[in-house]
Structures are given as structure tokens and as C-alpha cells.
Image (cartoon, rainbow, N blue to C red):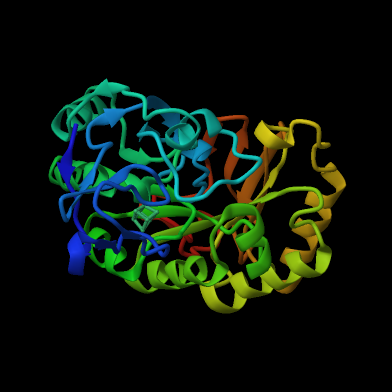
Length: 336
Ligand code: SF4
């Protein structure tokens, strides 16, 4: 279904410039942008994925991952096809790269009001725009987020952070939390592996913090791509210095996928060493993901266990009704 796009400029000669993500594609009439889901038709930009739901699930919020945002709640999670990156290790490549690898597939037609109704019926506390890159289905997520907020639901973006500042300006009144994937800490890695750039991602993270959006960071540690200890140290230091010690950092284990099916999984020891390094630099909450096991969130002041997790079974045991540690009264970093 064609739907008018937001955030673009009409240029001379029927060209348009999209302002949704940092690619800022200039698109000639009849062509599509890098994401393949925005098309210039006779000098106007249209999104091809509005209402085109390719995936929907009721997920634990911890699966996003968000460990400090309504822990133990469920999030109605949706995606359309498409992405503005092209990572070789993408775990959702069948839907994220679909518009590049084959023709754009049509999923289930579901309009924003129906999504909100389903989320409410299922008892979810939030709607997550996830699995593929939500920036490229901005109009669909924006309309859904507005309705969701009116209905008392929260909105969550799980994103590569490559959106523009203009896009965040529009979305932020409706956006409550985000998990941003900082995939590497070298610009050349972004250019080589993702077809993107590092700085716009960092700018989005800073801006989200300034706007008061609850932010957690994820880094999938991929062998020979971003597992250099010095690079990981520089990233940890950036999070500490620029985003704050209270920003959770999820270190996720890579498993062979897509174009990297012949690679080895990340050695678990690298994850644990990185966690130790980041904590020694001062980060309060560093978590290891894609490794089954138990973990917890502890009070940064007294060490009291606040939340325990075993798989997706979550118990909030150490935080009282007003959101402080039951033992020492320190305010919980996050949203309860
Ligand atoms: S969303 Fe990004 S990749 Fe897609 S057309 Fe716009 S600027 Fe290009």
C-alpha cells in the first residue's frame, strides 16, 4: 500500500531528498532509496511498507533487550520488511534484507488502531518497533505510537540509531525507550560492514539521552569485526563519558548467521572479559546476552539484588513501589 512519506524535500527535476535516516538519499523519479522501501513517484516520496506487517509477537521486554524498563512486562512487537543497513550477520535477514534480495513481500495488512487494540487485549505494557529497522517504517510506527500513547501504552524503538535528528524531533514525544545497537566503534567498520557511518549513531544516542528517552545499548560482539579489546574499551569509555554510567550495556554473543554462517560463535571468555573491563571503567550495568543462564541487576550503591532473571523469567524483588532500593533507598536507574 502506498502511503505519503514524511520528512523529505522536493528538489529540482522531480528528485526528492529523504530526511528520515542519515543516508539522506537523493532519489530520482521512479527510484527507491537505499532501504528499498521508499519510492519517488512523480516528485513525491511514498513509503511502501505502511501497514505491511511482516512479523508480530508478544515478547518479554527483556528480549529487546531492555532490562531497566518495566522489567517483567510484555511488549507487543512488530516489524515491516526492510533496513537501511546490510550487516552480514543479521539474525533477521529474511525480513530485513527482503526488499533487496527479492521483491518486496506483502505481509499481514494491519493498521495502527488494530495494533494498539491487539496490544491492549494481550495485556502488553508497550509496543516495540523491532526485528527490522523501525526508522524505515517511521510513518507506520509514528501513527501507531501516537495512538498507543493515548491508550496508555509505552513505545519502544529497537534500532541501529542511524536516524536523523529531524526524525527524533518528531518521534520523541511518543517514544519512551530505545535500545540502540552500537555495532562497532570504528567508522571504517560501519562503512565496510553495515553500509553506514558511526557518528550519526552516536549522535542519536546523545540526543535520546538529552530528550529523556530511556536508553540501553547493545553490542553484538562478532569475531574479527569488533572484538579488538582496545575498540571495546573505547566504546565502553564512550558510554561511560557521554551517555552515563547508569546506561545499561548488553554484550551479545554472535552465532553464525546469514553471510557469516561459516564463522565461529563468539568465545564466551571475550564477553566476560569485556564485562569486567567495562565495569572497571565505571559502568554500573553490563549484561551478557545470547548466553543462557541466570543473572541479576544489583543496586549500584549497596549491592542489594533488585531484579533476578533466569531466561525470560523475571523477578523484581529488591525495588519498592516508588522505585527505590528496598535496602538503601537508592533510586532505581530505569522505569518501573
Ligand atoms: S530511510 Fe534512509 S535509506 Fe531509506 S530512503 Fe530515506 S534516507 Fe534513504
